[in-house]
Image (cartoon, rainbow, N blue to C red; front, side, top):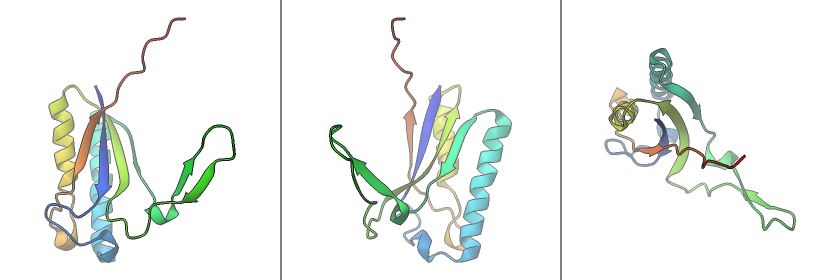
Amino acid sequence: MKYMLIKTYAPAEFCDTPITEWTPEEIAAHIDFQRMLGEQLRDSGELVDAQGLAFPDQALVVSSDGRSAPVVTDGPFPETKEFLAGYWIVDVDTPERAVEIAAQASAAPGPGGKPIGERIEVRQVMAAPATDS
């Protein structure tokens, strides 16, 4: 079963300091943790994909009615307190294993090296509907 584990930057359970206010060393420790988790999942054969995303100030929002030129605007406003930061797609045997991985990701280090308890959304990746050939 494939699951997407969605990482959202927001005030976390045990840390309300925005990542933009962390020290360079705290950010490096957080990124090292993410790399380590990715390596563990790759070594276990459970990792399908994992990506971090740019900050919202680098995003574009596109909408279209399908007939005229699309409307393109800058991404979410800078005062946005929550934003999609990245994801993992894992292929695991049970939903419980997906939750276990999400819990590990949630405990990533933040300021002072303490686990931040960030929210990780766990969603099953659905198979495409069958088509008649």
